Image 1 (cartoon, rainbow, N blue to C red):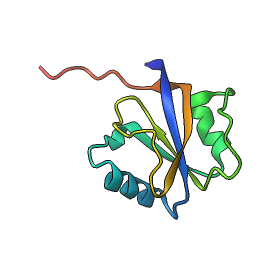
Image 2 (cartoon, one colour; image 1 turned 135 degrees about the vertical axis):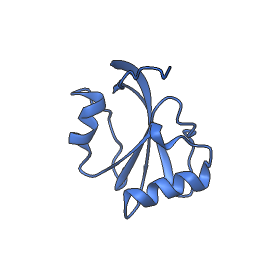
Image 3 (cartoon, rainbow, N blue to C red; image 1 turned 45 degrees about the vertical axis):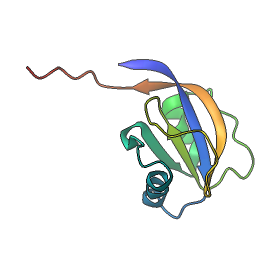
Length: 102
């Protein structure tokens, strides 16, 4: 199932995706990391998955890593010691509809 959603983007410098996720847990322990994606350079191909050809304008020097926060992530769009907000953009999320147990 595909649906439109507002996706937050934060940018920073991290040596690996794991370190970006660890930083998120340090600054926001209640974050739902199932609702977060960490994207390393080159960004264009990976961002096309959520934004198609309508890619967000990224500022110069956006960093090595982008952190995409989906609805329900619990990650605020606020600067941290290692991340700076880029903005919120409308994109498309793909989620599977799972049957209920019962």
